[in-house]
Image (cartoon, rainbow, N blue to C red; front, side, top):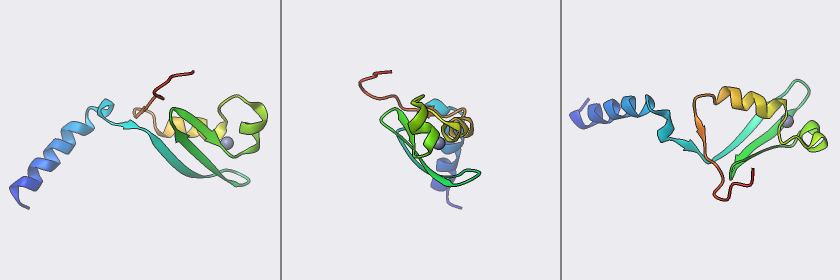
Length: 85
Ligand SMILES: [Zn+2]
């Protein structure tokens, strides 16, 4: 391995210890639930899911989104530019 690659790996290791450097702006997730497969997305600071409980309960979340938030714990989700909530 050449020295410039070694330098990049060292830098990546330092970066990975500072997770605030990376903010997730968009996600597109195929989520396999118990009964069906759902499309979970994160865009412009907002989550959405095409499952029934997300649209019916109007809570802005559902079990699939909550699971994604657990999976992503420690990572930063970018907030929308005009924060409306
Ligand atoms: Zn859902």
